[in-house]
Image (spheres, rainbow, N blue to C red):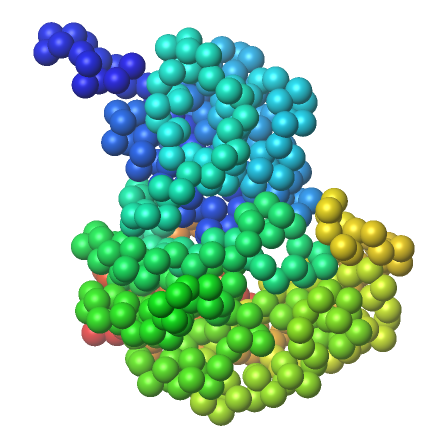
Amino acid sequence: MDPRTLGPSTPYFPNKVFFISLGCAKNLVDSEMMLHQLSVAGFLITQEPDQAEVVIINTCSFIEPATRESIETILEAARLKKEGICQILVVTGCFPQRYQNQLVKQMPEVNLFLGTESFSGLAGLLTGLLAGKKTPKMILKPDPGLWTAPYQRLLTTSPGTAYLKISEGCSNRCAYCTIPSIRGPFRSRDPKVLIQEAQTLAGQGVRELIMIGQDTTSYGTDLNQGLSLIELIKHLLKIDSFKWLRLLYLRPERITRKLLNLMAREERICPYLDIPIQHASDRILKAMNRPYGQKRLRDLIQKIRQIMPQAALRTTLMVGFPGETEEDFQDLLQFVSEVKFDHLGLFRYSPEEGTTAAGYSDQVPKEISLQRMDLLMEIQEKISLKKNQGRIGSVEPVLVTGLSPESALLIQGRTRFQAPEVDGVVFITDGEPRVGEIIMVKITEAHTYDLVGVVQE
């Protein structure tokens, strides 16, 4: 029911929605857009699933563990519906986009499936479903309107931080990856639209703007204007209220000296590079369809450390790719030992339907992959601890993010060298910092992933 149709004396009780967002930060931006749409339409967002008439799950389906998590979350929500707690169950995002109409029969409990770019009419569809109106169960057609205006969002990130999604899709065609088939080819968003959206975020008190895309360094390569990532960054730096600008998901082959020089020159750009290299064996990188080898990676990292000696490096690695021999793994192990990344994400290869690598015959047994993951993490934990110990005694700007979930007595935040969700945090044990502000903190203690400090007056 639309509250605008009610008379002045008619009582109105808004329908409550419980929203679950799974997967990456790019997915989170889509979730925030949906939440804004629902809020404007008069729905009440609740934190309690057993109080909601509507449950919406924005899913991830990039790899098998993400698909499994999506399915388990949907089944749990279906239980609430079976018990009569919720009336409408909606599933959006990568999972329905990937598996499409086969889900209609497999998950009859779901009232509505929406694809990755099909959610602009969500509020109207929900209103119709709650009123008993017949609605298609699967809507996958993308809405071109998503590309013509700044994204209006209800921010769910910690105070002071927001993501700016500068592109959609990917055209790299790595042998193991489902993203191009789910999200489509790479498309840059209009720079004018991005600048308007960034200005809105600045007006909402955002101090750290995080630029994201499946392939951030490709930004602008498909635009007629010829505007590159570097030019976009320069425009965003004109917004003075952004104290930190962070770049995520940088393809190694597209990191230029010009970009590094800009990052070194501009203090407001976080000295932090997230470079998902996936592997370090030339043979495996070629099989993955990654357009570089180990020498090129070493040259890049040497160049980064020459230009930005203070920079923190993060990467993502895959273990157990088809055909990965013990020699390939030792190449990777030695590379990680020598390069010494500040942060490292690790996941095990899973054969994904529709990808080139799924057809390879020389799949690595699960137990071997798990053993290799353990060995890599043992090495990385020692590296991370030593890196953190090197920060003891330093005074760092820290963005205060709120109370620690581990203890109500601790405030936590992040340095410029820590990205949200994927890296460690700084626990602030003394002082009364304001959430959402950037303060100076003296680091007094170090752990494998986290730091401890006190407010520096």
